[in-house]
Length: 363
Image 1: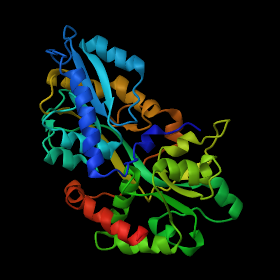
Image 2 (image 1 turned 45 degrees about the horizontal axis):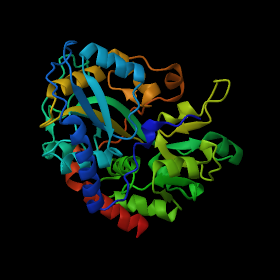
Image 3 (image 1 turned 90 degrees about the vertical axis):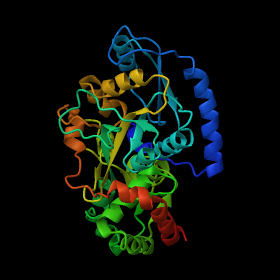
Image 4 (image 1 turned 45 degrees about the vertical axis):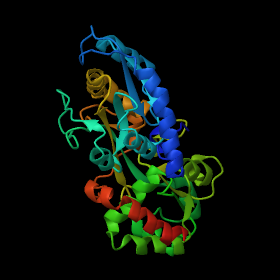
């Protein structure tokens, strides 16, 4: 099974604020040394442009080298990539270094942290000239590049052998017949974990999610620090010796558990348990090379990049007109009605909700 890197962008290292500051400053100094002398004065999409564009992103950035070369040839810019950790750490670092930006462009701010980046003023407004149909910006500064559904996955073979129906809904997960079968990721240390917490808030409301989680605790839910631990250590469907047949992962994960003959997949996503993550790109305020950053944001929306996202980042393209791989069309459908939480509510209550979840589940 290939490792769906798009699904493990989530480990928010449980570092303290102090360690985040120290890390951010270290990266800032390192990148300032790289980008400060770029002298970039290009214009987006102008092949006569020159200079360096520094992209600040998360650890799961994995665009094909041929596409990077294509961008450099078409735009005239040289692309440098600076990975800043997971999505949560990425936004924390952008906020902490907003007066000395870590680069020129950013990719990987997701909808659970987007409002924080916008409110902190770390982005310049920029709208690509060729925004695909159906692609809507956030705050005039964040352009959607890809998306993916965080959902509970099931080990189909385990349920077939046990003679037990695969659960369907969030409520099913609290049913005693599924006791001690589920593993999730901690929302305080994992962005997929945070996405699933938001799914439960979308389903049961701000006043009801704690009772729901209390019912999961009573039913033996296990909490892992990261998506990697939940999926690869504890999930029986990953083929790594795990013991739990229900695990938090992505709707795309079943496309990576296809049998050797390609006829079927051994896992499934429970599409009534999902929260949709959207990943954005933008131009960093105060960057050395805003024109180059704009050219890069434009490039991420081209058909070539959008078509490569499933294989490179394991996420769905933002442009719905781009065809998906055959395996994705067969085994990785998106949820019709994922749970939603207003981004402003997420921004206002995220930390409080995590604290309340911790008190309920961890104690």
